[in-house]
Length: 245
Image 1: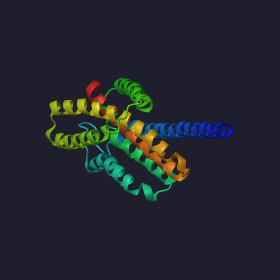
Image 2: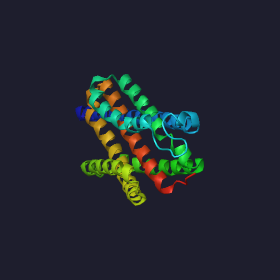
Image 3: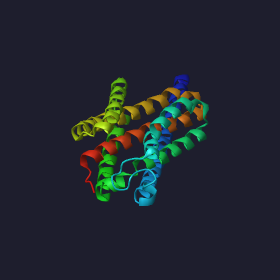
Image 4: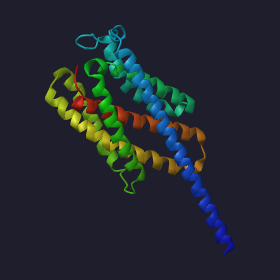
């Protein structure tokens, strides 16, 4: 009986340690994501509210990108693929630095919104996105339902959105943009819940290894996933709800 109590106590202690580690891991994910968000919006605001700086990337009147603007527009997408390919060769500190560099470049690519939309509508949509994101992420973290099967369908949806968005750059169709925005909100809402559960599950599967370097990089990758979910949901909602200047 005493031996059973000892085993039960040890199991309880181990479970408590894993729970504490999971909370610390999720705090790391959300705090890293939050810093990235602050960097993005700080850079976007600084460039978007300065005609001289914005003029380096876009025509200040038509907002059409120049060559450098096109590079900045597609740079975040290229950096995401590069990050995924190089993350295993990076240290946790290097991965975090790369993430912050990515967030800054994303700010450059989004700077035009401060000219195209009113400041009030940007703040309003940001608040709506924050509330929706928090609810969806909380549900993904707490639900007992296994939503891992959503991943393949959602990723296919993202690929479809990217292709449709690139095509519509040249078509300039408001109807297509409206459809893309509706689908984009739904897809990234689903990804917010899916990615949150995936981050939690991945930690629980690897917590026993005690590999702090791997867990550190996993937190950065998790922060990147949720950051992209938030930014994309925000941009699609801004297209739907934002008041243009």
